[in-house]
Image 1 (cartoon, helix red, strand yellow):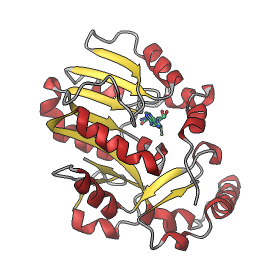
Image 2: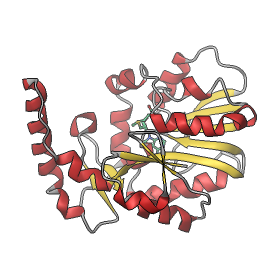
Image 3: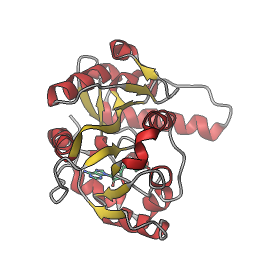
Length: 258
Ligand SMILES: C[S@@+](CC[C@H](N)C(=O)[O-])C[C@H]1O[C@@H](n2cnc3c(N)ncnc32)[C@H](O)[C@@H]1O
């Protein structure tokens, strides 16, 4: 099985090229907008911990709305990029280096909203993933919200499927991508019986291995960890997916969980 080496991957996230890409985006994904709208009334009173902030895509949307905002990433250069990108934030906003698997220094029961966006949790090694959930439960206020997205293992078949492109370069890239997927991960059917897998899916030029979970198993696991009132949202539509339907979702590359 592929493995995740978080320390090595941090070098990728700290590289200037990757930072430039992430520091220039600001679009909210559809389910993020849905969840923002659901929580909007609470935000003016909310203390928010934004984990794996990257170049500050979510900062653009949340920082102006919440009472207190801590933007963080384990990659020091990402945090520096955010400090540069948002020079005029108020006194209740900070940016700090924090590893989501060990939030030592973050007080217990403090945050109303903890956000770990764009599948950042999938960069954490499987053996360390529960540390993120435990830490979120520790630093989150009872009755608060933890929001994250995570890759969908049931999307693999869709990901491998060849599509027709009119442009030759897109068509060629697709053949290259599928060949690389096969080389690094084998055939998608290999993972049919698995609850999760570590997949080299192509992001950052096939330099990273990424965690993929079966959505219904992810929810079961969150319940086991002690999370309550779990909701899931479709990446494609932004709409809520009933938990009883999660095992049927094959067309969403990732799922947003609240
Ligand atoms: C795919 S990028 C997403 C960036 C940002 N959340 C966004 O939506 O644009 C993943 C981010 O997670 C960060 N990351 C990965 N593992 C982390 C960890 N254990 N603790 C905190 N941040 C982490 C990386 O440094 C990177 O900035």
